[in-house]
Length: 133
Length: 442
Image (cartoon, rainbow over all chains, first blue to last red; front, side, top):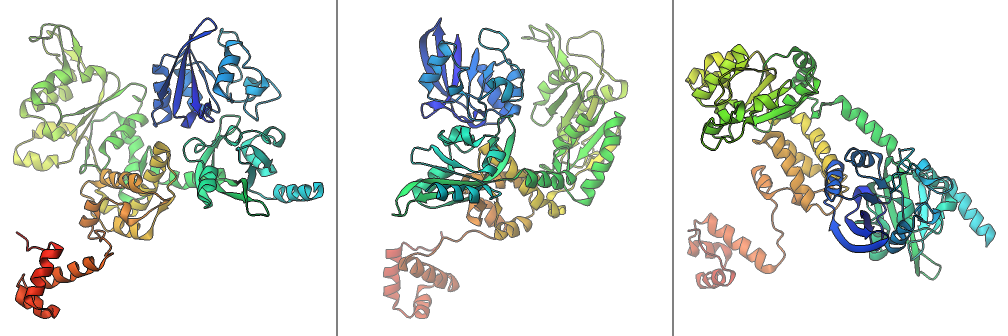
């Protein structure tokens, strides 16, 4: 399983639209196998989505995302868990234990109700096992 | 103390601009009502959080205004950026930031104020929309007349000839015609006839069958096939050879063509738009372009004026390019100085709109502030516009060199007469020439 997290100063980048670095982490089951950081080119949203899709991620975890960029990623078949914040290692640990739904990882403004029903344009997105949330 | 805090909150909540403060660890310590409204984040969720997780601005990672204010001690004023609210909307805002100090003048954090520019942005778009037609920006009368007839031309399916100097936007017009036409769901394929060698143009346009020539191991569709049901844009049509002109004429006359090596004709279902930066009627008179092909292409003609004939568009275009480059390059240039506009307005632009775009892009690379100033413009352009930036004279040597050079030029490099005018002995002048490295032009 290859997942990506946009990273800035060891935290999840605040905004995917302007994020500059992407941490690509490979998992074998729940164990982390490798890490690699790539630079996201400073281009248009469509090209940004294209670049991310070319990294062949199975899942992208990121902070705030504009509806335009989310649409572009959706069209390119990239699964996204947006509106996540916090230190990268804690987020990765939470991801491997299926605890990303925890309020402490959700960006302010997305607490209270289930994050994905509240934040972002999509009412539903699938989790990494393909179940609807 | 509690009363003091309450009074502060009441004051901040009555301010129309968003205001928040942070401590030295970038944690939000206060968040007013307008900030809640603009960001979509309730105060109780914002306070105590990292400011970047709450504010989610385009500059958080690269050009944080608060960080800049805290590091330099200088306030940041009205930086144009966008934030992303919880519904995924990009909200344009202007941001100002400054240090926050206690009563002992120690820096205890920062304060950021921001204003929602959505309404301003909507007004700007409404004004721009009046002067924008399918990505073409102009309020020039001739261009507005072209905009008026473009829907009818697009609907007609007739062959169109677009004439205009390089950089006047011929491809933009072709794209607009395609996008407005009933063929818009099919592709528009562009061929720059001047860029493809004549020997390759035939296979490029019509394609070839397997075995048509050595190395033709696989069938390759040509641009005519790729543009099936859509639009084929033939740019720089004047550069096509006489032999190729005959082949194109056949497609336009009979609507059929043969891929290389094919035994049967293929019916072409597409619309052709051609463009040239040279006047085809003049080329017909000279005998270098076929008259019958010219008339086949010239069913509808659109003549684009050069930029020097639509100077009223220059400020509009510069604003348009500034917005585009701000977005692409993640900058926040707000405009240009009156000097810059004066120079831009008095130049003739042989490269037309494309040249103006390049000038603005050059300015974006060099511009360090929020306003484009004269030194940000390309030196070649300034020289051409008669406004080459002069290097400031900063030392006595600089002044002396300039004075001596000018005097020598006035006296056709006669050192005796120049020395007399400068009030010095010829030997002294010779010594100064040597010291300052001044020599007559070769």
